[in-house]
Length: 163
Image (cartoon, rainbow, N blue to C red):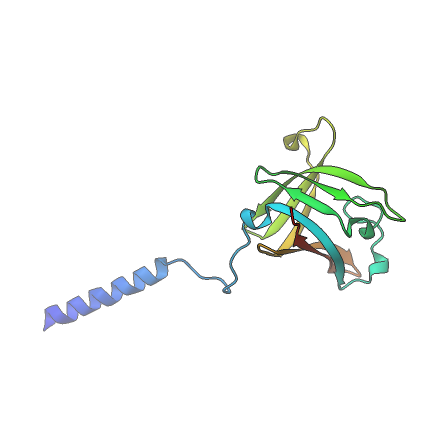
């Protein structure tokens, strides 16, 4: 009888140890991976959370957030990429080379602008955006902005571009 009780106690202790070592699950949402972001994207619209659109003067180094609506983003698996801004009444058409990455730890999309002759390792400034979702067809990225002492967001909604 003592052996049976000892065996049950050892088995129970083993279950407790195994449970504590098993991987923890998150909220059920799969983490966004680099593979979800790689490809060609079109920024089809921009919305705002916690900030009126008129308060956003410049955006990602351009004169207006409106310059980005309709832009196409080419994000290769190597981290090299570019975005092309369409011509509009207030913006000139242009293509900007970038080096990008995704951090699964904090679910961010980051990129650096690269100019002629620059190497990504030598560029120390860039943009860190919150990657809220990305799948085979759509991607949402939020740019945090300080507004009235709080964090507000410019929300960029992308759709996968047809090649």
